[in-house]
Image (cartoon, rainbow, N blue to C red):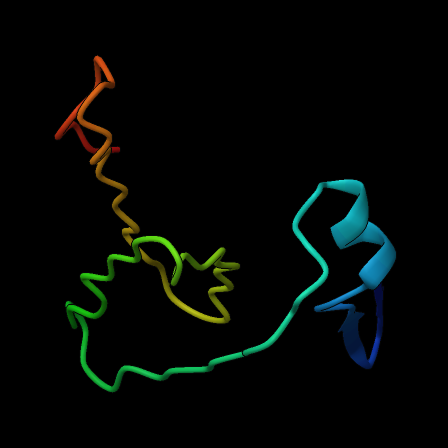
Length: 83
């Protein structure tokens, strides 16, 4: 849900029924927030393998982000390609 008026806005971050609808899973365990002081800060370089696989929700509050995904599935025709 998103609501905007003269005071600002209100937005839901997590709603169990919506997560279930998109098959996101029902074990919402961790929520992180980071802030980068300087432009062009590099963060991340994350990799998870079973049984430690994570799903991620990315929110950018201000500014912009370049989020890169690399296909590491060896059987994929897109192996080592990024988007």
